[in-house]
Image (cartoon, helix red, strand yellow):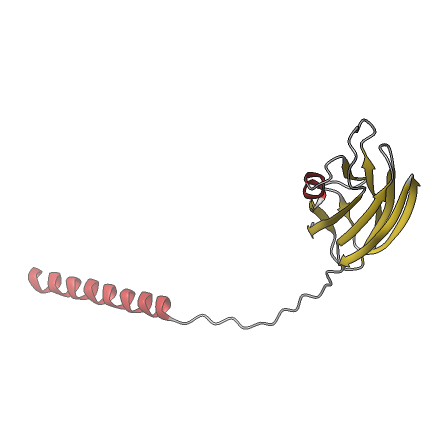
Length: 168
């Protein structure tokens, strides 16, 4: 009798394991499907709005123009060492995202080009400068013929300067 009771217990245990495995397999093999629609709206609109000629010291402005959203081209004619031309550039964040300056390019390239005695510099804006949505920032671009220069150089020089922004 003991043997039959033992066989019954083993059968019930095996059936319990079989039921447990079946339920587990069923739970793991069921398909989970989630549907949904999400819409994110926003605008990225950062651009130069104006370039205003500032102080010219023994210089002639040949041209200053916006050549792309955040790229400007400056061509100056400086008359002698110590001459300079300054410009105010306004950049606007007309979008809905806050932005930050990632890089400013073109200054080093312009300064390495001939004539090297005429240099460009950008001030009042740096890498890391923030531009909140809906605001403007004005910065300066200046071309200077080094005052200590003793060589006669071609007095015309051009720089293409870009201020590159990324989302903050």
